[in-house]
Length: 272
Image 1 (cartoon, rainbow, N blue to C red):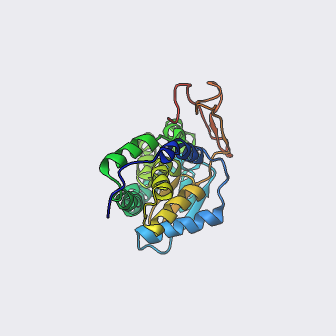
Image 2: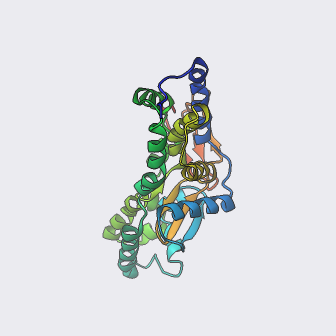
Image 3: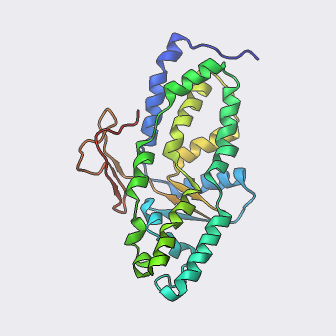
């Protein structure tokens, strides 16, 4: 098979359009349809694991997970505010998160990487590298939310009622959680590259994997994959950026979620 080695002027002109299309997708404020999200998450589990039975728990924002609210979802009948019982409860949740996460790199190994390998193999390496450079961008939402989630667990009644050593262990749960995290807006950059190559250069993808990746980006928010359960979040209802993808006002929230979680930033951060 002859490799694609160059772009026509028309194909070159479309690069900016595709990049902007997927930049806007990364900033979507369309509320999550729980039925569609459930179907998409089940398709992902079927692709990356043999697990068939698991719970999908929806949150209004990542703050609902970072502030330890997820503890009551996993063990709803336990008294998390009882310091005498807390050590055993923390040990149980640490063990469950440690042994049963589905690493975020599993998602990339079984879904994203095969797509990139399949499509990339149809292009000359110089053109492939050029397209990666031209179509790559960073999600401002993915960049800013983790910073604004810092110390969220300290707002939890569980953390407030815990002893000092217990508080430190509760603070460490976030590191277990993010090991299973996949962020749809962060996947928009690779979707941009694949979409352009498939639509404009007529590259052939792994159709099932491409469908899974596109629907994940379209139908899901931040998602934490574990064997027994999956946490997934709604999108923000407001993203305040100007035409240069920079915050409109330095002292106002650039991202807001329905549960009140707000994200602030400075003017010198953009999507480009």
